[in-house]
Image (cartoon, rainbow, N blue to C red; front, side, top):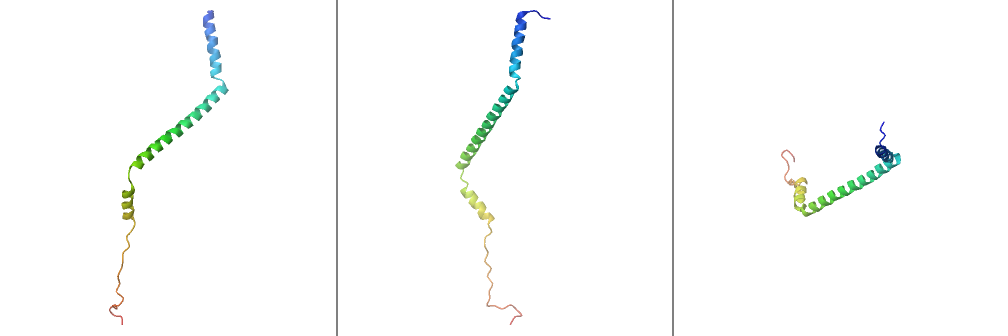
Length: 92
């Protein structure tokens, strides 16, 4: 066995530090804070991306292109002119 007091002292300090680091409460607290900061970061990142997209899309004028697209989709009304005064052949 090692009898060097300096090494034993260092090993005891390492043991105390490991005990503190592996404490269930400390681990749970770290995980909880990690989850909170991860959620906040994700929300802020999403907000920044959405704001950038809205800003860029607001600079593009979609009015004319959307208007012409809708006009192509909507069928135009057609007028059918049927002369009523001329009887069909074979009718009195």
